[in-house]
Image (cartoon, rainbow over all chains, first blue to last red):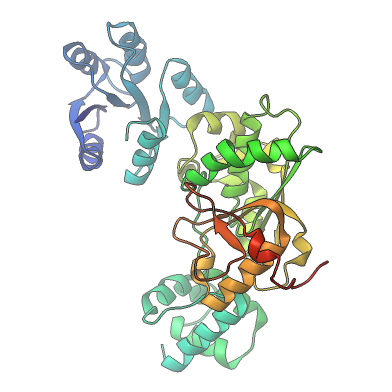
Length: 121
Length: 281
């Protein structure tokens, strides 16, 4: 079973994402900010990371930069999932190594399509 | 809704668009026509249907037909027909079309995602096929859909269905809360209103025809008539793409499926030699 780390400071969003991802046969882990996510990754690298941008303590893009410097940190497929929906944010995310980008609001269909696009399902 | 009114609606839809309204489609009628009834100032859908039957208002007939036909589409829908174009159809045609022009017809283009997906895909392969020019025609019965297709404007929801993010970044710009295709891609497609029930001669010779998820709404006789007209337009070495749930089997022998290529058909030249030509030379 593939693992997906859901990183979002909203408990509601994490719950929604968890439900969708579990239906897609993922084992789901959660983190409420970038630093929590980084610690989770140091313990065990997940196959996929669904990543919010704006979060307290450490934001999504900072987390992504840090992650890629970690041992084995290039492996997880990162899909942003954020309300930031302008081209400059999207381009920055792709430059830092995100594979896909979901603009909130999202639903199960979009998440499934994006995960399929990057070969996770 | 009186049975008389729904029967009239069903007959009108079949005549106007080929759409077969199955029995017990009260829910579909209600959900599609409630907004029309409101907009046109009727008390409810039943009143709209009665008016439709008793007054022959062409504009209203058109509006209702448009609302009842399904326009569902998204970028790179089903993926396979685009992968097959890239892996088999394009390489084969690139060898034989010495002028470099490949003519493609999207026969039920709806709001444009299918022809635009082809245009974006081709642009991504520009370096591989510097000589090739896709001449893409998109037609649909719905003026409302064609207007949207021509605008090249899509909602955030629409650009997230099937479109890889790299393509969105490359070919779209953000306009307020909408996303607009670049002029280069928009200009690659000609859009035109066309009813597949009419004579299709004006479409002209085509190398590739996409006719996906439209025949399923027609009865057998209409399917056959449309497929045979399509066969007359398609080059002998051309390709026909049908929807995943569609087939030519049991309808016409003008086409045969390509082995191992789901949804992809070529002309059955053995049958064509004996079949009478419907029109043209």
